[in-house]
Image (cartoon, one colour):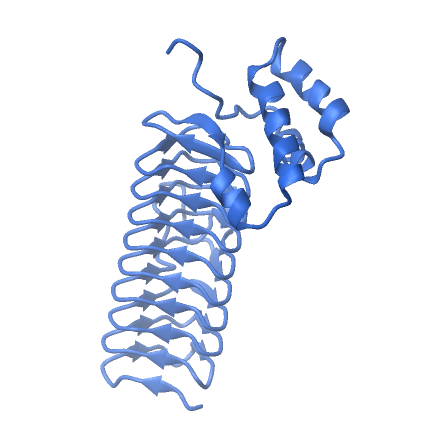
Length: 266
């Protein structure tokens, strides 16, 4: 299938564009951009910087990808944006490249939906099948695991990790790491429980989910320190795949603060 490029689009001749790419009116594509098979730029899309886009990804009007990061330490280093396959990037989404202080790459996985006005800052690592609802703002160096969903107008502080299959309620402010399968909500978000709806939709076995629920209660409402409670969970439920995922997430960055349930009585 031949390229379909509107005559008003401005395409740098050095850009690498697959044969069947569609580029609509008034789009701008920079010299270091690579667009894979079947990529679609609807109209008024800007893709600049060292940006690579996987097959089948679609950009809607006024998305701005690869422009310099909003980081005062950025000094023009050749950082990049890597976007996977079959993503939907809706209107006014912004994705900034990495920086020297954060690994030089901002990554978006495959099969993601970034809704209107979502912002992914420098050096973020977003997994596969992630949904960022309207006007979600993710600060620099944030990690978002596979199948996570961030509700509309939620904001994530820099360096925070959102675990796989987590759910963030709309208009939440996330200051601390959210465990895999967790449900976090609030203006200064607390852990409201497990994302049981998401676990059911993903088809996890009910017996494993029930055991995860038991482990969650021990981790976040038992006696002793968090370290003591985690040790108890390792002994009693450590063989459970879902529990092991949560424990591995915590162990990987054990010095970081976790989003936890609201203290009783508050």
